Amino acid sequence: MTRFRKLGRPASHRMAMFRTMVSQLVKHERIETTVAKAKEIRRFADNMVQLGKEGSLAAARQAAGFVRGDDVLHKLFTELAYRYRDRAGGYTRMLRTRIRVGDAAPMAYIEFIDRENVLRQSKPATPQPPQRVPLDPWERSRLTKQFAPPKEEKSSDSEL
Image (cartoon, rainbow, N blue to C red; front, top):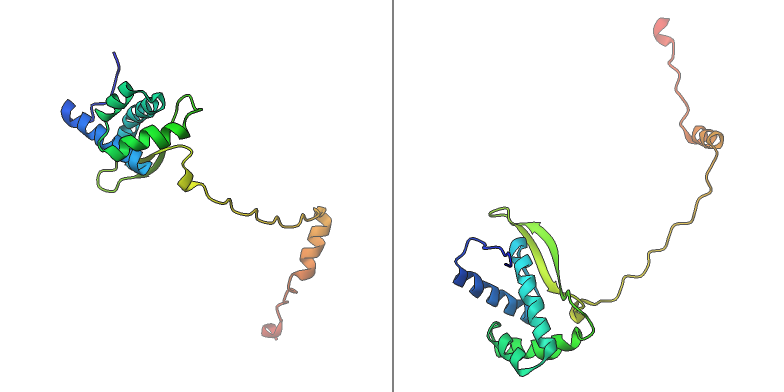
């Protein structure tokens, strides 16, 4: 028997929530949700991409019964199926982000990997400062004495 999180909801509400969240994930390719929901969505989203890769009429009907919207279904069977044609599994990643302010729930991004719209130019390498030759301890102490201000001697005028 497959174990899953119930998330404090009845089965119909839970499945409706998962259907909506998977559809939004396919549409936007990244959503923010709680960690527990993200772990559950990952199973369904990977299954939908697998159906998209299969590409048969039966797979299209199964996916249409789960996801919401024709644009989402079209994206599954064209763009995502093409993007992950060589990948055997693991189409999503979960990135923990923050603790939600209202109830301290741990939040996470769930996103598809290898997205084109996040690929960006890498930053140029920062130039390294020139390497300094290490000084021996005696030389270092002599240099610090050279730049230290001279000590002021107390005047003995108060004793006279």
